[in-house]
Length: 581
Image (cartoon, rainbow, N blue to C red; front, side, top):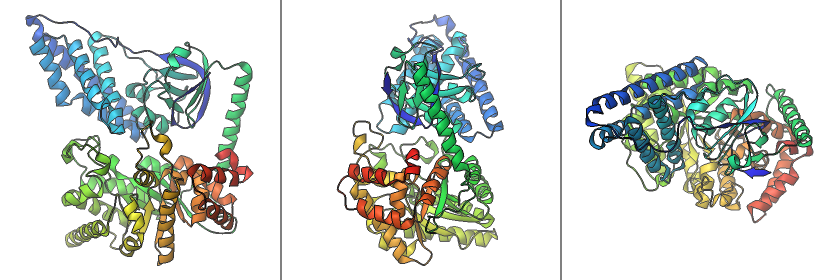
């Protein structure tokens, strides 16, 4: 039987399954207490929170010792949720005013908070409802004296299957013996997906009906790229899958020799292949695969899951470490790209009905120049250790570029007055992710040093399609002729300008071999992808000539639909590259 879900973390796996059941009964308790038990029950809740904090602190310490920044940040976020005054006050109120037991008060409060988050439009906040439920599960288990499931020391290879694989379970699981993850709920922005990608475990989420279709110990196969789960694996099928796994390993191994080679086409055209990162660990991986630099350093992860904004020195240390690691290769540091859809209480952002089109990214920075200049100063200081560049997100007009550059000039002047070393010649560019920016590229390039095309948002804004909305997800395609024409306009504009100015792309389209072939033909000279995808794209670029890619692009731009264009690109891919599609 084939079941379809969401491919949340890439990879392929086959193993016997282990079904994960909830550690505590999901049915909300109806227990009440007598008046003389109030103080004891409040203390019971207080002690449970303290014990939960100790457990999370231990998990956090292990993550930091392993240098696992992603896992550490997620656990820190859970710790903040655990002490959220809204939750704490509501639980205490239910105990005192309604005579609820601590267990019942926790369960009802958590259910209410999770329901509020699950009903929000923004996919990021919707997924945070799972974190709230996870916290409730931990507190309930402590209050009931029930041990949480320990997945840290498994004795055999398994695929974990459950209604929901929680953040706590992901944070402690045995990454050696867990070969894959399948859950009935969750999405690409869930912490389960983020951690699975970080650990390198394939995952399929939102796989409805999986628990009804299997028994504990059944042999399963999952494809995290296609979002497919296969049950009832016969011996013949098992051998086929094992062969496929061997083939994939061979393909991966064949790429490793490319790390030290230059990224150039068969006819000698050189392009730069860079990496998208969020932290120091990403920079280390970028160097391992031979990246030509960092094409996108997402700095917003320094700002979330904390009670106050990072200081200038904190930011400087983070940026400088990456710049040093890259050894004078370019590091494009994107300034704060966040909005009202992210939980950053200290920014005091208003709740918006449509945050994707609201006050976010450069708009927040221009409205809070003090916050912005702290980040600009940190980046300028980091620049003396190599080659840092500043990247402004969500630019719609030249007015915004000028306003940002004025603040950049003020940041330089303040550092100069203080006698602090900084890179006075540091270059600045913009993200082209909004149609207005693409259509006025000729105006914007006059006062910027480079463009970085964000194909994800450019597609979303051009087509008016939320790419995470499953109902209309099929309408989202970066190969839509309208999107491609905007990309061609941007690339052609920059290439005609010359003077050392360049256009790159840091969106998912650049990490798709078919997309990369088309972009190469359109004249793109810089591709930035996740480190795990980098060698695959290098294989594509080094396997074709630029003239061939141009011929393919010319034909593609004459077609009328995204499906026609994708079919052409697939057929145009050389035989030795078909396996990487």
